[in-house]
Image (cartoon, rainbow, N blue to C red; front, side):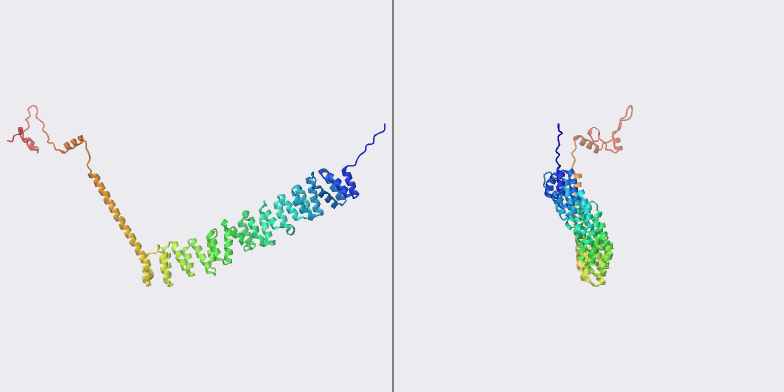
Length: 449
């Protein structure tokens, strides 16, 4: 019996490799489409093509295989790596379409080795490595930085220190966009540290919009920084509004600096700040220096200090400000003593200016006297009515029962004492005995003898 010869057919991989060796790339692609769908054979196929320098043909094979029903993650990943090495201009498009089907850590390493920073940032973002994405953009500004993407990613970082590094980065490369960045960072930013950082960099003027946007937190560092900026800009209206709305700052320090300011409006704000700290005399004295008569009168009236108000009256007379004297009388009406006002007016011969004040005082005192007199009259009438009701209650007859009346009658009628009759030989009582006892003698048997 003759031995049977076994006919062995070459595998698909062998046919593909033979076609590659013969540079029959169309046939090799047909065979390769049946190979790449097997993940364990894909690596050998790629190595065979790469070792012989057929990169274009390998890329074409993998591109054709992406539409297969059995396409797997390895195919998309290897194509992305090939793009990073040989066709970097096509890698971004490939990632945008198939980023969810690639092995991102593996592609990340390939992109970093190829210095494809924009694609690297894109992958970090999709892989939720936000810290690395921000660092990459700051380190490779020319290739990787994009304003919209940076602002989206910086808000998601876990390391807050990157906030302050990004502020330094923007100050150096994109200073005009820093307020937009601060708007994104402000919810998690330490405002004290931010103000200190910009103060050291001497960039507070640049971030003024940021300071205004976060002033509603009433942070002391923010308030003081913004107040200093407004003072430097000589914007007294905004400064006054800031002081009224947000009170968390060193008021005395600001007042001491403002009272030496060359503009009167800022010195006026200094007087206002002293008033808010109950430094009434200091406030009034500052108003007197700048001839701020209205403010001086209002502050003296609010102080509730009679001595301060009377001192201001005397100062108005020394300055020959008779109209101000008259106005101050009514501004501090409750604090002034009429005798002091009368003396000052008489001494300076300005009774006409003080007369409206005295008319008001007279009217007030007469009203009080009339009210007191009316009250006394009403009290007397009520007292008399109460006394009359009490007497009526006492005189009202009381009803008594029969037994009580007999007892009262017998108790009020005098009864003559009866002498004891003698017994056993003592003499009987005579008619003269009752008379001797102080009672009238009663006739015997009803006859008068």
